[in-house]
Image (tube, rainbow, N blue to C red; front, side):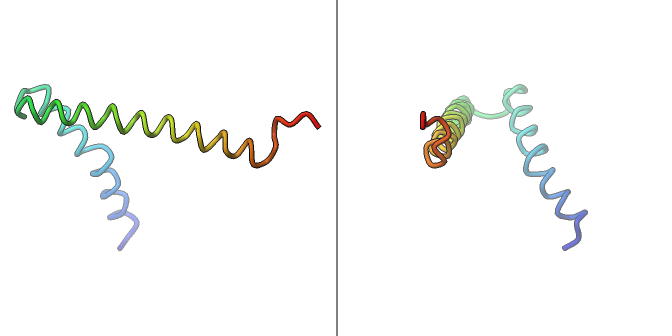
Length: 70
């Protein structure tokens, strides 16, 4: 597969599909239940990303003894 096709695939997944979902919500094309599920998934995913990232960074600091006094 060429690099152009990979780039187009990544753009479709990261830009076009989420933009289509947001526009469908804005235009009121999706049922309210679907809109609520999408919003809840976004909140849960971002919370997991932030908390998980912080735990990963703290683990790295503890593992390398970055803040040890000795």
